[in-house]
Amino acid sequence: MEIPYTVKNRPDTGIYNAKLGVWLFLASEVMLFGGLFSAYVLLRVGAQPGHWPHGWLDVRFGTVNTILLALSAITTLLAWAACKVREFGKFKFFHGCTILLALTFLGIKSYEYHDKWIHYEIQLKDGTFADGHLEEQDDKQVVLHGRIVKDEKDLYDLRAQKDIQLGEVKIDRANIVKMQNYGPWHNTFTAIYFTLTGLHALHILGGTLVIFYLWGPGSKMYKTDPERFTNRIEVSGLFWHFVDLVWIFLFPVLYLT
Amino acid sequence: MSLKAFHLIFVTLLTSLSFGCAAWAFQAGSAVWGATAIGTGILVIIYGIYFLKKLKKVSFL
Image: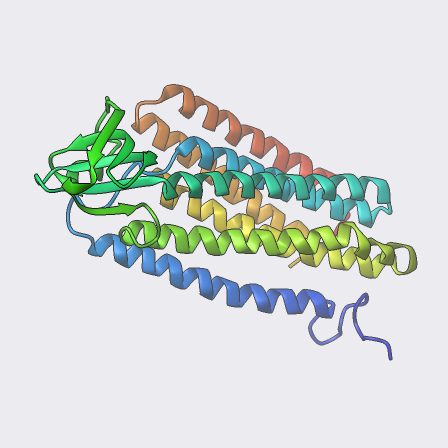
């Protein structure tokens, strides 16, 4: 049995079925990310004054990742255009570039996550707070590369503090009241940050797997049914562009505000 | 909507992001970042025009 409207447009919708399918899927994705963005806005406006973090994320990493995704959107489009004009070699090259760019994005994101994972805030018995990256720990003491502040509020707005002095901080375990890393459980900012970027990273991973399949084993279809294959590339490109668009909103919201 | 039309939306938003980043950087006191972001925005506009010319024959639907 032949699947209808994989190449020709369906008369009532005006588009081929896969395109209609991916747009319906993307509509549900808009609702998913829209809900999470709304949650971000509500958490932020509901935060106590001075308790919303600023400057916790490295803008340089965010900028590089934005450039990587923008370039990957271009290579996806070029891969589709190459298929349209039946230049299979160019398609392979451009989609190969897309995969490499996506993997680099995920590598940088993993580094950022790791950086948050080893970043600790430690409440001490004298009421002060130690904050920094964990260097080593044993039964008796914890060593951070960071600083000690008098008030927890001093840890929130890093952008307002121009010359932060960091150094080795040794803390006896007996002096620790609470020790917590900057994981999703740390506060509402890290919770929504990990949720939004984690979900986005999963989309990048899923998209990369699909693109890899179309670039590798799935590209056999080009020889037997090039038009249908080109449509598959367009559909995967639409998904990829959506994921890139989400990042265009995520980057300023999380990194610049 | 085809990939061509969606790409055009993407390029438009990317341009807005670049100029938005430039405004943010100037306000934060980083002229170098601001100028780089403006340069990027101009590059994206040039790319957008090139892209439209290149795919003139491809449908927006």
